[in-house]
Length: 404
Length: 164
Image 1 (cartoon, chains in turn cyan, purple):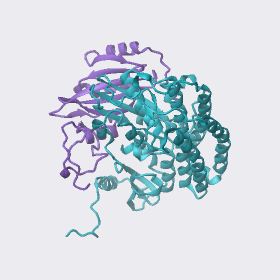
Image 2 (spheres, chains in turn brown, yellow):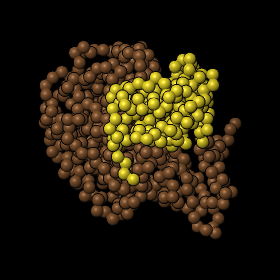
Image 3 (cartoon, chains in turn yellow, red):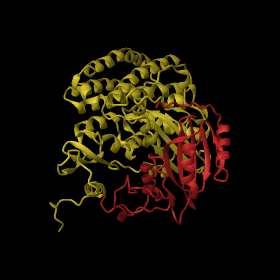
Image 4 (tube, chains in turn blue, green):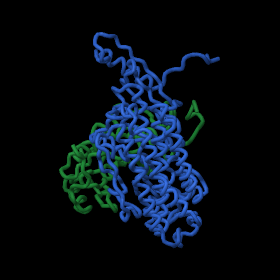
């Protein structure tokens, strides 16, 4: 009989952390406090820790409150998505893409559908393009609301108000999306060459009412925390991502833009109808936690601008290519293709190798959170453990995307 | 340092020409894939050297590694590198064939730090060993998992995941 109460054998990550402690101790480095003995402790933060927003596990080496080392451990939400693609037709795979980065599922679907369309050499109808941008930007707002809301909730009790405000208004967006697609979060709405349904009658008016109301609500969010001394103390100057980090680690999305890099695939690698739209790339200057928060807030305003322009651009027309009315079996020609697309969290790319059959031969996702998480050890080292929570919240990870 | 995007104006054909000029006999089958990617093939023995020089290449400077994918082509594997040039705002896709019998290729994690986790993922899923990688552990699957599931000849057996 195995002893159920025995301490579990440390796994590879914990062993690595312990080994690194031994190495620094023998090298005579370690604690900042001279003359004191090393007192380093290895702590498992996660996989069920409330501040990691998902099943992220950080093996943290602490010296008192100081973070000495971080080893991220991922894979707790691994659902073999890339393997599943090998036995699903291109159509059957659309709902599975939804479940990768589940807070921005419309954008993920869009990235996948765009890649297959590029492989097949088709373009969606004009009305479908506008609807995609429209819903994609609504999804971006909803995603940023979760990102900022939960991040502020991690910081202090006053953040709890923030997260409730955010989720209250996010529900309106999800209702709008539900009315179009039939689902709140897992849409299965986009199709190759178009979208599944046209917008229902009366939807445009509802959407207009929402975007009229929303700017005031964003101001309300900002008034909750922007002048708060505690919030500022905990965010300004903390967890700085330099531009060199952006280059070295392939950081994308709001995290890169907060460091002053004008990297936005909607502008640098334009797709769909974005070239016709008027919007700014929001950037920060310092790349700290506060700038990342602010960039997301500003992006909500920009997304509202885009949604409004799209509503004006809507013209009657088909939402699905006539030649592809019910193409449940499509066979893209052999070849490979990668399309990167600006998700709320950064560059979400899909790489597909086709062998000309009904199934993708190889499908790979380039997930923004996977790349951003790689920076964690460098970013958290030397901070207090409480700040580490704030910093990891500001990076905005979605484990569904990281683990796939 | 202020990072500017797209400061060097070169057409895709010019970039492809420059690349084949700078790496004669190394980059093969250089072709342009619309709208902004150059695709090339490279022998695995030359990978590290070429990667270093690509990063330093005047005007082009492929400084950021975007992703790495392992692909099982049946007779051999392929390690695909997708790198980004900030100055020209274009991408380069490098296909490096890796023989099945000895699935090894040099690591580029000392050239592009981002390669670290991507190589671990390719090792985990496809079983391509990146020689010289500082910490080549499994990343998405459990430590005691047996086999590399994205290989086309992988057979899923219960004993492959003992603690599932």
